[in-house]
Amino acid sequence: MAKKDVIGYEAKTQKDNIEIHEVENKFWEEKRGKKMTRQKIQIKKIDNIAARQVTFSKRRRGLFKKAHELATLCDADIALIVFSASGKLFDYSSSSMLELLRRHNMLPELSNFSQPPSQLEKSVHAKLTEEFAAKTEELRHMKGEELQGLGIEELKKLEKLLEIGLNRVVETKDEKFLKEIGTVKEKEALLMEENQRLMNKVETLNRDQQEEQAVVVIGGNSLGSKSNTTNSSSSPNPNSQDYDDISLKLGL
Image 1: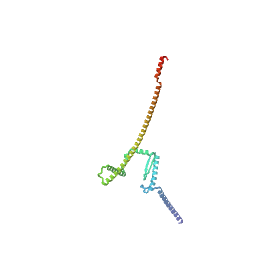
Image 2: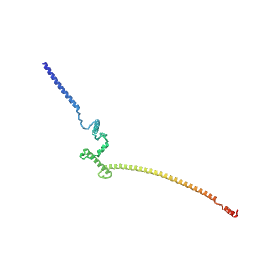
Image 3: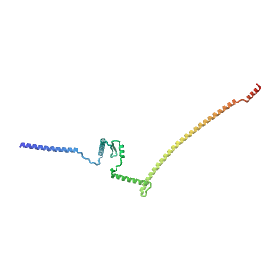
Image 4: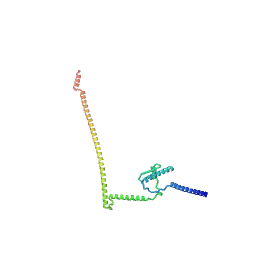
């Protein structure tokens, strides 16, 4: 009986050990599976600003890294443009960004892949259309057109707006006039200075000419007196000539 009891105890112990090992293996497999399986992140806007900025920085670097790997492995031309929530620009290009954008702009419109405008585009277009119509109507009112539909308050507001605009126009016009008057005065001063310079030059030329004429007159008078002296000294004496003739006749 003792031997049978020992054999039964050993069998029971072995069975318990097997069950323990199975439980342990199952535990570690489950734990290992939890480690290996990544929990899926729900794709939605991150409310925490700090977490959003960190996620944006990590995802942006990962995106640029994948683009670089794709360009290197496949010899592809890639250009990425990313604007953050604050409006900061981040870009990546495997070659010249301007060249890639030029190539993109040169591509023809692919009508087969054209999609209908989204709801946002429709709302933006409608808003811009309304603003354009309002500005056009306001411009007509400022021109004095289609004023019948305006009330008293609207007319007063328009009148005040026109007065402000008219005052600005008058101020700008006066500034232009003053500027032009200053320019004309500067030109007038320059012309008067040039005129005075020319008058001084003419007076100087007249004075030099008069001095030259005076020198010529003085020189002519001195030459005339010298010639008269020479003529008087060289002309023969009639009395001496008659005396010589009488002496010849008398044989003296």
